[in-house]
Image (cartoon, rainbow, N blue to C red):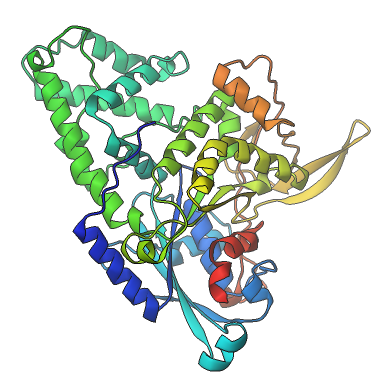
Length: 490
């Protein structure tokens, strides 16, 4: 796979050195939070911040367990040009009654959490309390996939995109765009309405492929799905095009114009994102909805595996030296987290972790070779279910008890969003590697998985708890904090 071009410019070096100087006086960790659609980025950040501020139950986060955390609070963010993460609105959604899931990530945002703590040993006696700034940077995972375009020409991207669209698993939702492509005369005079039609059909194909039903992951450009203020601009009005073998590219006005717009997209959208935001991260967590991919079928698992490999290929990862810490900081710890662990019984958590380990095996090996620490775990930023045992047909079945979202279904049962239910989700594959092998080969018949993962409503607020102290139930958020920032409290 072609990797992004990551040349260090004078501006990059200056900004990194400036950030390093600030960090000497005010220690700071820039934590990147990403994941593909529906992986739970907004929920994760809200839960992490809330549980630190309110002193949630985090027994495996060592500085808190040792009683060295004095307080945690929000401060103005350091980058005035980046939108603030709307923590208060998202928290209100999660803790209201009835509770709702907050709106998903649509753009880059930032939040600064300051943690006052007592250092260990001699440092405590010499300096007393210290402060650590945690700058959390939230951005759509679809934007991260765009970084693969930095090292890719229009011809390479077009060839890969068209090949994927013609794949038997994709033609169901790419047929309209492929029909347009087959009927297009690339040597004809350019008409803007024709380009707009092709771009609209291509975008509709991407949107359908990324829907919950199909759950495909590896389909840049990401801004086609989240255009923001670029919607309708020429930079977002293009599509892949290939000429027949032997055709002269200079004879195709459409090819020249589409290449120009693609290059503008890479230069004016993708490169600034990498330079201004992504290349400045210290730590990274990648949230993965592996259960959603399982719901869509093992072909989606294979696609997710490829997407995760592409994502990590964009990271400037590795162990930091003195000079790299000043001029080009590297991401030295990366956590892959399988989200929604509360949607399976705790006895399946090890299998869920194993599934994600297999999905990220290639990517993790590359990161570890570069010197970065990599960890994989199953988590739930908000625990929406409880566990129970139900007797059925003389058998005891481990079940999940919660309130399924409106419209969720199990067999003929359609839930209304208010009724609590006890649900047996089925068992995850005993051998995750086998599931992926079948996903790569497209063999579905030999892998029968009797499961259906239902989405649940958040548990909502506790009427007996003062709002200022209200914490959010979770699974392993303390392990997450220990790995990502625990080493910085010595």
